Image (cartoon, rainbow, N blue to C red):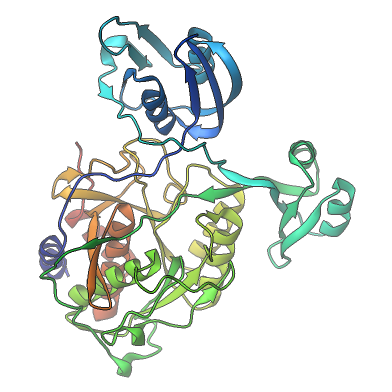
Length: 458
């Protein structure tokens, strides 16, 4: 098995070009240069992307002590710079060094100013920050015997999503004030096991058209003689809508489960799910030698929306497991943890489901979810063997690193997709393909992959 994984790594490196970072970011800050006053509206965001936007809006050169972290939740208008930085950075220390003929400098640190050595790159964003959760919605998990309809009525809410089997419900309120009042009430309600916002997940990376590629179509045939064999996993692809893969690969794809409504994708560009499915199948081909009975169960949790939500992802995980998936590929993530999704993940793990999730495409050490949920196999990306990709999350919750780019095809055109998403797809494909050869235990497969695909310490 180790030799097979070694040769597969070499094949993946030949198949994937490497390039620099691309990113989508949003604006959190407004700075008035004339008055040196700052306004901010930040709700539960990680430190790094906020500082990127501060650098862009102000022109300051910002340096951070590695591993400095903070979840920022502030809203204010026209504060003096010093007061604004105090509110922004909380218990982190900082030093602002004004300059006359060059950009001013801001140092953010936990120990000493001299240790603030990691530069923050300014974003190119001019858009207003997007909220990190769905407005006026809360997810609630009730204890056995509680009545959601009575509870919703008492709060003035509508039940817009329900999972009676697991006691999980999605409530919608008339406005933000009612939502916040209900959140406070539900946290102190003895019938409530947990309550969360309905968080957003980051938009998936868009594949980019490439002018040419010498990569051949995926050499893989379906081994129908092993159909139904439990040693050949079903991979639940929790993602966007999938398209036809062509080249005989549709035989590996089961009927799509739609969580967020039906949508017809643009036929000229591969969706994120299509890109991940092709990446998974290329990895399966390498691991299995070109013939496999591993299949993919697509679960669309985005629908026609730019963002997925905690509710849809949780329902997607349940639907994939109920549909027979024993491996989950979650090439998605966000910065907010949800106790309710954590519980759904734990239930899947208790059934023996193996879960791979993307570590995230920001060079921070703070956690991305669901990758940072205990027991989930978090996958980050390398740019070359032994070197972490410049966009990849540097947190110590990651356990594997694989190539951060994949070439995929749609029609007669080739595209490249970059990030920890394809790295995760490679990982789940290798694991499932290896399982299908001679059915080694998952623990043995994971140990071999950790040896061959360690996270670079750079």
